[in-house]
Image (cartoon, rainbow, N blue to C red):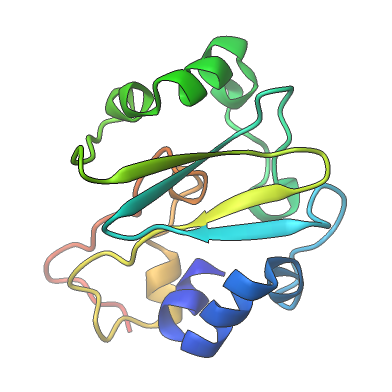
Length: 153
C-alpha cells in the first residue's frame, strides 16, 4: 500500500481521501479494518498513532500489534511525551516538526503514510514496499533506508 502510494500519485490521493476503499482494493480488509484513515507525514508534520483506551489497531493491514502498543504506560506516554517516546525508538525530530498523536478507536483506525526515503528514485513499487516497516506505519519508526548500491527494480 505504501510502496504503491509512493509510486502512483492517483493511488496516493485515493488513499488519503478514502483509505478504507483504497486499502481494500489491495485485498486488505476485514474486522478492525472497516474504517481506515491514512495520515501523511511531511517535513513539517510527523503523525503517530496510539489507542489510549485499549489497543485498537489495524490488524488486517499490519498484523498483530507490537506488545508495547497494548501497554498502559506506553499509551499514556505516547500522548504526554511523544518526542520522548520517539527518542526511545531511536529517532529525534527537529523541534520545528509538529508531532500529531492520533487516537485509534473501535470506529476509526489510523495508519501513517511515511515519507519516502531519499535516494529511491527509480525504485519499483515492490522495492519501495520492502523499505516500509510496521513501526513507520504507526509513526514510531521510519522506513528503512536503501542500501547505497541497491536498487532492485
